[in-house]
Image (tube, rainbow, N blue to C red):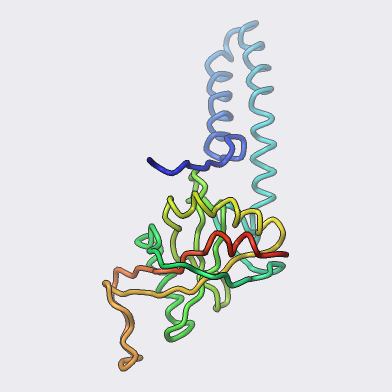
Length: 212
């Protein structure tokens, strides 16, 4: 059975809102030459498009600039980072899309890596909500990849509840280059791509025991 997928509400999803605005504009433009019908359709189109436009502006104000959002973690100011007990390890998904940021994290430290778990994250313009891992220890968080969907389904909501109270969970991580770990006897040798990331799997009970 596939894990239950969590999704961003439609009225918080920018492509849906843009679609409403474009469809309303198209309907108005096609009937603009029809006197009575054009006026009626134009009024209806404006009434339909206005809430979508307002919501798009609100989303832009809420997520623009250096603000954190579902699609990115920009800064950790104001969050309490808590390490959590782990039970086993797992490989992150979509590390193939994060090669540059993983490579960046390799320059922050030699062998010890930590990631912070950012729940209810989305891909750019995506709607599916997943937990994304970010490397910490540098000037700003660096993307590492997403937790597998099965793991996210079991702990994603708990991580989100903690984030709402100002707590973000951290776990240890390891970076592999072409399936191999860094060689400590060759500290100046760069890992070969593709880079993949292994992280500790948080214990469910440990998350429940975290208090703000």
